[in-house]
Image 1 (cartoon, rainbow, N blue to C red):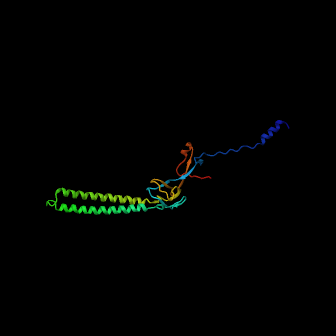
Image 2 (tube, helix red, strand yellow; image 1 turned 90 degrees about the horizontal axis):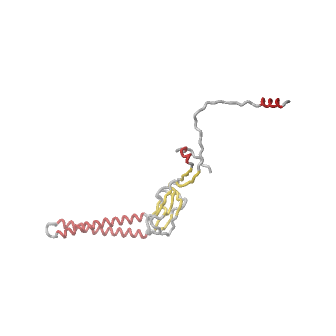
Image 3 (spheres, one colour; image 1 turned 135 degrees about the vertical axis):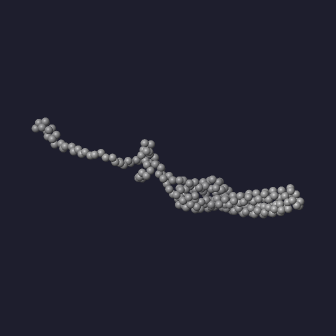
Length: 214
């Protein structure tokens, strides 16, 4: 056989290519974007003390605890503030008694005004005393309310449902007002904060499915 005959035989043995034609259609092609990021609390709440000068007596919350809104996390010793509340109550009662007496004197003075039994200066003094003691009652009532508010601050409660993520409070400590005692993941929710390139931002939409890979 000649070389030309062999080449012709090989060419003839090659299979023919099959070509299939289709009509172009509009459709959606799934797009997969790869992103990475950190997992963090949805909302991180700092729980701090609102009073000072009180000793921390008990801790009821610990890291990892699931807590409900209003649940007591810590309590302060209230011996001092309880005594101050009682003192404020006594001061209010005393101020009210003085105000009542001054008001009665002023009313009697006004009832005999013009008879000459009391001078106008005396009547004015009694009226002024009635107003002054009434103001003292208001001041004493405000102080009592302040002390009761401080008394309420002796209990640290959870501001919402959640999970305690850290605790810096120590039994026996006397923290200053504003000192952080706990941190809490609000409602126990965490979120993934993904990082993607700038060119892919426009391709991400609300409701897109996310597949987490370990």
